[in-house]
Amino acid sequence: MKLTLSMIVKNEERFLRGCLESVKGLVDEIVIVDTGSTDSTKEIARSFGAKVYNFEWCDDFSAARNESLGNSTGDWILYLDADERIDKSYHAKIRKLISGGKADAFLLQLKSKIGTREDAQYHLVSYPRLFRKIKGVAFSGEVHEQITNSLTAVGARILQSDVIIDHLGYAQDDAVILEKARRNHRLLLSQLQKGKNHGYALYQLGQTEIILGEVEKGLSHLNEALQAGGFGKSVEASVYGIIAENKYKLGEYEEALAACTSSLEAAPQQTFSHLMRGEIYLKLSDYRKSVESFLEAVEKYRSLILRGKTTAAIEPMFDVHVIYSKVGKAAALGGDVPTASLYLKMAAEEGARPQKIGEYIEFLVRNRMYREALEAADRFRQFEGEGWYVRLVSSALIDTEKYGEAAKLLEKAPEHDKVTLSSLANCRMKIGDFAGADAAFRQAVELGYDDPQGIEMYGLVQFKLGKFSDAASTLTRAAEINPANSRAIKFAQAARAQISTVSK
Image 1 (tube, one colour):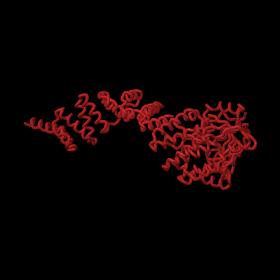
Image 2: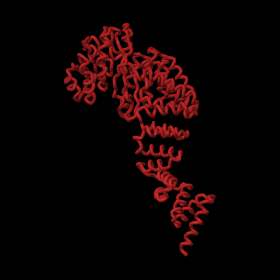
Image 3: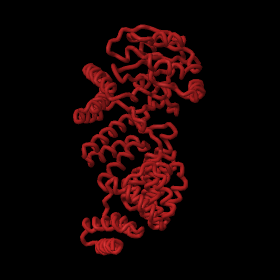
């Protein structure tokens, strides 16, 4: 079976080499239609043995795609964009798909990173990117061009696969994304005027308008898309999902829940709308339903998304600790300590990320589960030099009266702020290290520490060390902060008496 890589490009020197490297050894032919590059795109393409054709741009992505398709001589077509990659681990699987005779087209999973932040999420979208070259099969739509309608029209058998295409195009700054959205908006309006792919075009128009900040207009077009139809259940589920997400952002929670229900009716096995319901119930303080919805999302995510399968057109993809954390936090708010503890622990252990470990230990300390907190601290000891670890674990040690261990840990803090120093001072005082306590209290006060009880303790330490003048001053300050503090008043008087005795 001869496999052709079919592409359209323009000024893609930044991405093209990586794309072509990723399919080296997989495809038998590379056909590239260039729509007006002024950089080194065509030279890079030819260096990989590609057949390069020039095509005058006419504001129609399908026209360019069909030009590439028409010049392809393979039995099967794989179509990609320059900012997409296929890991070599999928090469053998793709070859097996096209030689197996089970289908005429396969849905591949497009995995897109959204934004440029390090913790940016991904989403998965299913497209028939791999299909047999059949007479009458062609792309349609001036933008967000589709091959599905054409494949369906000729009776092609379309099957799902778990092959993933990595898409880099959305991992760009907002300015680039907005520029693309404005271009797509113009082309979608033109497409609608021509009556092409009406329902699907309205769906894409609604999404685009939301990206451009025109949320109400976008929601209106999404509802029009649902009325027009003409797309499958997976797209229908995603349309409702987008409506739900934006109604949630607008604070229209009942409408958001209704949209989630409709989305789940169209694609019950999806993850997104279960997650969305969990977030909505959280806002409504219905923690039991929030936990139930998040747990449904966990089950679907494990069984489908983590295996590269989707049932809605667009599904979120992220490290699994994200969803475990959602369950744990909702359970904690609802007072379900066992469930919260279990899922926050799972979130902490999945990849050992500081934020999730901190959330878990903080939950344990807050619920006086000190043994579990200290066991967790021991498992994640590699972080003991970090401030969040020192703060949380020292708190557990202090609450279990392990003052010596707490003092040693606090001494390792990367930065000694007034809170850390006051805790260190109290621990040293508890183990009888009054000189050490005095030094830590002094540094804390220099940084602005003014807790009434702490100031009193500082004065008592000074009294214990025989620093009566300092003690009198510190204890007087404590009494001024809290005039009802009889002990501070008493020891301030005693310190002054000692000063008088010594002066005599």
